[in-house]
Amino acid sequence: MDIKLFNYSLLILAAGAYFIPVDNVIKDDDSKDIPLVIFEKPIMHTLNEQNVSRTVNASHVIRYKTRDEMFDADVFLRNNLKEKNFKIETLKAQVIIKKGDDLTLRRDVKYKRDDFITLNTNELNYNLKTRLAQNSVAYDGNYYNNYVKGTNLYLDAFNSNMKSDNIHFEIEVKNKK
Image 1 (cartoon, rainbow, N blue to C red):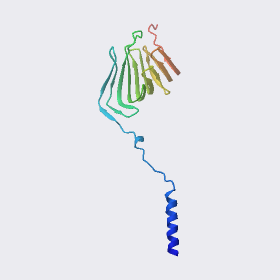
Image 2: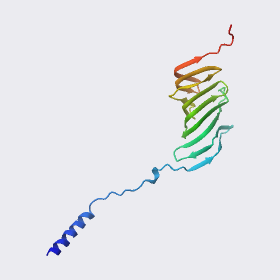
Image 3: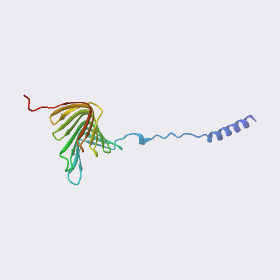
Image 4: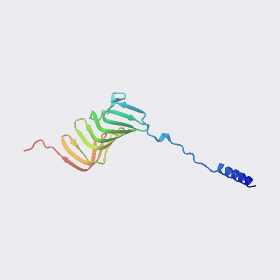
């Protein structure tokens, strides 16, 4: 009788355990950020109908699913608009992260537009489509041979507007007497 009771209790326990929900723990392999392609010392060109609109030169580039990371990179952006009077914009940084049309430049960033503006900073956000450069850290540079420094830069390359906070501008006077 005790064996029969023991067997029935095991049967009921097994049937009850069958209907208890179990969470399946599935490892999500897609969450790993694996490089798709790695380029060593690449020179990449972007072509349009008229000319080469963009050239990227870097020590190495890592392409991920959602972004590109460029190291010790130079980005040359040529002007394709006839109504604008500049030829080329140059962006240099130790690290450039590209997501869509947005570039995030970090560490030793240098921005140059022809010969009339150069900026040095540690961080710069640049949009390739709107040609807007913004940052929230200190910068310094030259604007038509005049010294400029400040924080929170806003530079609109299409409309040639520049805004900044805490700006210090030193104008070079040519006729000193």
